[in-house]
Image 1 (cartoon, rainbow, N blue to C red):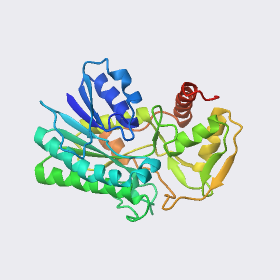
Image 2 (image 1 turned 30 degrees about the vertical axis):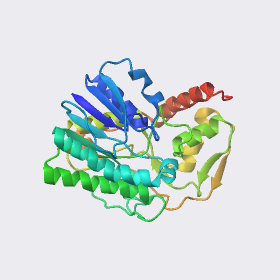
Image 3 (image 1 turned 180 degrees about the vertical axis):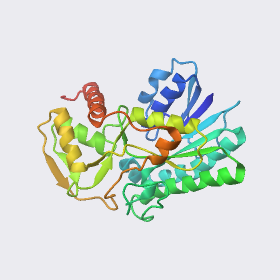
Image 4 (image 1 turned 45 degrees about the vertical axis):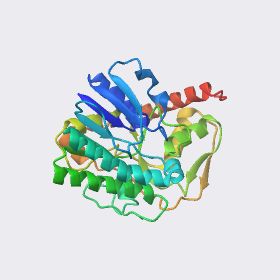
Length: 316
């Protein structure tokens, strides 16, 4: 296989580069590095089957020779990023997806689009099934990310039906693990780093809102299986073990051995009250379900962030 991964220097994208190389594929990693990092892929540069292109996929995409698959992960996925880069977030979800789909059509390649649980918005049903249409505020602060992904899904299906592109859509629920940025605004790195630095753990609202957390190894396995499948409709990939955020913060305090306390802040606008995937389709179609227990995954993440702190001269 010869695979192009857009957003390949990002958190999930870099792990997918690892996985497809392990399967014997040749990888072309594309990233404009607006949120991705060369640190995530520097270990791959000695591999002759890996190459990197610093490129903005909202421009015309060209790669010489045959391409068997495109995994489109280019996006500003964290709240810090999409609030800082709202226009870029909308452009990569719309124009970037259009360019990537045109590239897939020209190459007759399988196209996998990384969507998100955020297409469900602040859901009125729990857990969320793929058939649920969502409850999204299109003009709220989170709308630039939510609507960019909803548009990208619609564009992907249009290319599938109109041009016969062999497409896949994965709806990614909260994922965590090594290579996340230390302060990217997502709950896992923020709480872990606050605990490691001895700072109060910030929980928004009263902490009764729920999330579910999938370890990166499980996520990569789900994405790989979906790519290799023949399923064209959206598939949820995530961990259905739903946790209240205040309970999750206590778990992180226990794992890190921190003396930090929990403090409560104002709930951000349109913050979802619940978030939990129904993974019945993934189980049936892909034979997939998450395997890594939360505490095991969090211990791995804590060790990673400890190593970042040491490299940056942190005290812990």
